[in-house]
Length: 212
View 1 (tube, one colour):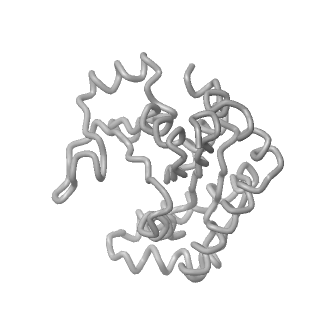
View 2: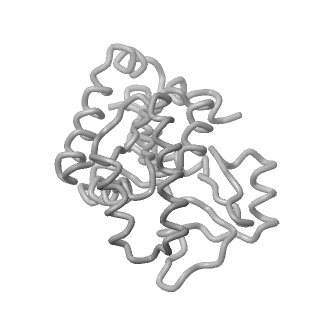
View 3: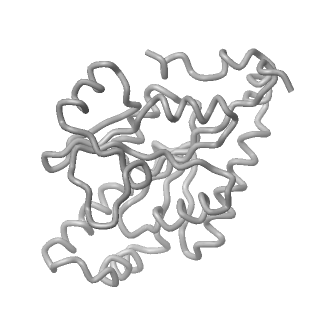
């Protein structure tokens, strides 16, 4: 297969409220060996056990701000005084290699990516019920009554954004949720629009705005 015939990978953006299980789902998808997980950059200090390039790319704040100016992030946000962002070059590199890329990011970041790369596949992970969501958060054992209420209220607000996504997957059982996401990706690759795009040159397949 020549370079011009290579298929471009899909950018799969996965979001959902805290406790919906999106992290576990993404872990299962990555372990299947079919996907590449985008690693975010951050200005916060590494926590015990975190590995550079695996959990995050840890950057000095000045370096991060310079990268923002240079347009090096697909999306970024400041959270509690620290910056977080998705490096653009790594995502483009993997997509051009034909690898399907998964972004596990918050809703704010996902909507920013959608503005610049509408060809992505945006999937929202839902809990089977709000009661189950609450139980999952409680089981973590890391929340105070106050923080639990804050997270629960936030989850209610976040679920309202589901209409901004292409698909919604209810995470009742992990295996079923993972299989549904794989089925969505298979269906997307069979869409007429994507098949037509793969006929043109590889350089024309990545959305031009990603390079802006």
